[in-house]
Figure 1 (cartoon, rainbow, N blue to C red):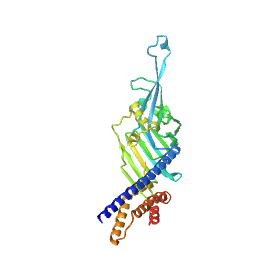
Figure 2 (spheres, helix red, strand yellow):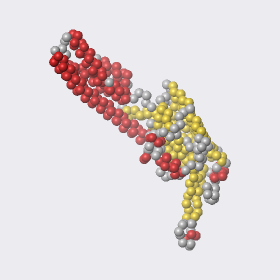
Figure 3 (cartoon, rainbow, N blue to C red):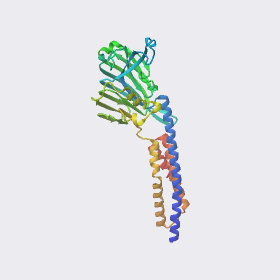
Figure 4 (spheres, one colour):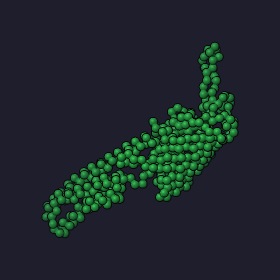
Length: 374
């Protein structure tokens, strides 16, 4: 009797090892489907627009300086060269009201969440007249002023417009102050720079994954409404208030940075913003700075399947224990091969759960797979 029990437990242990290999293979199938979904999401992002990082707007002053070439002979000094001095000026206050509409896009059986955000901005600059023609070193030079902002993925920029008073500004591509930064800039009439400047802007931005605002201002007020209730609010500035309902969500940010300089270091700001461009995108930097909103998928089919499969061996072991108890009470012998068939039937449940869940949803797939394996 002792030897028969030892042989029984040894055979059941071998069956469990074999079934653990089966469940490991099933988890490999789930991970493979997850990779296919990531490829599909990346494909949608390439066509629609990826994670967006919007920085600005800022005012750019570019001045042409006339100076002789150093080291040139006296005769050559009569032909001066010109260099351009570029300075940035940040707004005192930025107010943003945005509406974000989220919709799914499909690639085969896979679904990716995308968004379109329509935003209205009111940007107030301090009196710029004292900087109109005078540089930091006291020299005077003819200067041009531009309103500019940078955007991580300019493919998602659907519409943009800006007004200074009753005059509409015409935008050009590029950040206007660093060729390596993507974005848009518009020439501001010099007459408007002679007084405190208020700019009204409208933007429509498409993207996927996340949306990050980096408004460089001493006072920032941002209010966002959305038809999607599941957002993760991240970044260095969290919302002061937010509310989610089954039909959507709202969030509001208020930030006051009184120590922020309105004339920042241009090179340092450029280096920081390059890490948010597609060629050198740093998620750690871009999505933890400023105001960050990340789209969440509340029920991830493959995550649920992976969690369920982690408990596969537990379910199989409990089923084996129940059969073994029945075998001991009824004194009927159950062959180890029969145990193996029971375990394979339970393993098929997890495969059915994966395959049916891609079309029917996790809840319906669970009931259907359980009914099929009962």
